[in-house]
Length: 514
Image (cartoon, rainbow, N blue to C red):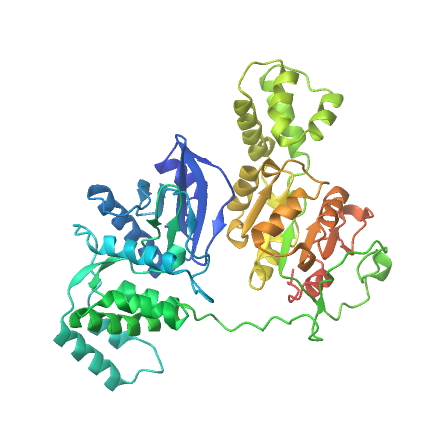
């Protein structure tokens, strides 16, 4: 990717100029995913965020598989390749309708027999595919030698290698990461997704992965029934089970981190499930109590930040954007018009702009012009607010993070991407996604839903009273205000900036040194 990698947006524009984002960038453990449209077709752009060579090669590998599918489609429904750049690497594929057969990689509880059979049928169709161009991954003896697994001894590995040589299971294209979350069901029919590990392998690998991921014994017997009486397939299955399980153990290892304290453990303060109208008295609320130490950090399930003038310095950006738009149309923007636009919901903003500008231009075009003007920020550089560049990564180690902003989602994604912060956020809730902006609760409620946390178990941080009122109306368990230049804010706690050491202690992270 080079010493100065392109931003996600720039990289997409270079290989697919017609791409238009339709939502915020989402993040998995290793990739950034950006939904959009190309000529009306829903697509997904995917780019590694883990820059270790293994994950960069996985993305390039997936591009190779999609290219093989494009040249010789398998008899199974899959996303279609739209554009790709192996050097970046970056891939854009069509986005299929439907829901996963199961939302989680590791299933627990009962899974319907129908869903299991759907996945197994999809895999059988993929196994019948005989393409050129799909890489091979069949050097199992070498893989067995590399396994870092304390359960397996050297003699076990020798026995497995000998079994593989004697059984000689046939090679076939295996998905490589077969589990219910990588299979969809919807109006278009069942489909497979995610081909980072697809390769020619000894038969049995996919069945071994499904067998490992599905919990109950009855479900596992359903998988084993697909092996039939083929001894070679049985051998490939069990050797694959050893390799796949060992890979799962290795891939799930993480650097040790301090365990998160649980509510009631005495090491932290649980988030209250109910809100109170009592004026805040937490240490740090006002300058005269700033010296009171915070001794017990909070334990949220998630944290939601405002954006403008909390994470990034964009004060006056809306005024500059409106001024640029009205000037481009040769129309004067009065103070009354500015106030009217400030309270206009996003879904009505295009019509309001058309009326004030006296133009017949499509409202979609006017919204795009306004969005571009906001992203340009009047030609002024956008920088992070004090403490933001340090606090966000520190919190992302332990908590899922989201943004709730009265700016358009695309603008928020643009700024956070350029500042290198986008990868720390699970969700971006922009005011184009809701009916009512702040101070209504919609944005903070949406952010909590996207994080899959209860608002009562979450923390909100905002620098304006309308934002704090929005979080309170959404029933957030703890609301923190950031007071610029000493303005008084109604919140559970108020601090002078995101760099305040007391704030860091309240959130359970070691204060940064500045």
